[in-house]
Amino acid sequence: RLKVEGVDKDIIAQSINTGYDVAGNQFDLQIGAGGVGAFNNCAGGSTSMFAGSKEAWGCSYGGVDSRAACAKLPSHPKNHPSGDSLKGLCEYSWDKKVRVSGAGKEAGQCKYNPTILDVGRVPCPSALVELTQMQRSDEPSGYERIAGFPNEDKKCISYDPAANGYEPSKISAFCLTRMMDCRKPSGAWTSNVKAHLMVPGKRVVQPCAEDGYTRIDVQCGCEGGMC
Image (cartoon, rainbow, N blue to C red):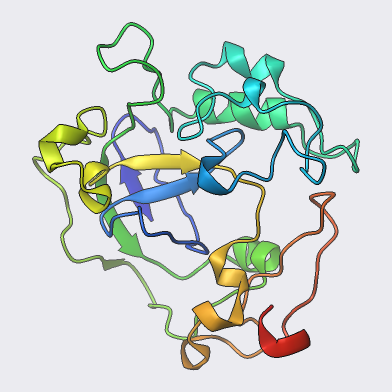
């Protein structure tokens, strides 16, 4: 459960992915056109999930930098022309104020993010578990604050990497960053998950196929064990 500056309601999110460039006091929220990152599989390639070039997707880190830019995105995956609209999901993220534009600001596009004020573990809602098919066995019964919070005096200064010595794990400290790379999350690999901390049958994230909707059941493993 995340309390974020400027966001009207707390965010209930499940952690299913990680990376070397994500700090422990940062949260990278997967949202529509949030930035394809270093491992883009959204657009621009023959096996990409969406048709068209990567240009409409904005910055590699941060994605589109305005609500208006969402209109240039494709609406649906190329192999699934229905369901949730990517354009609509992108606009929703701006309406909920979970992303900040760099327009008119000194550092420019995609350099600004909201500040995280508080973080705590809570029981994962059944809707999220149903979506990811992943659940920890050591969930708290109520709210369990994460060490280092609440944040009472620090601001997200991702726009000034020099302030943290250009160190990736510190540049986005206390920042709600964003991403969407259309790839299998790290929590979908059995080698990344500690089985003794997971509910049986809900050990790893069930990823989707190239169409963005068809689920691939890897709970029982797969060839070589590296699902």
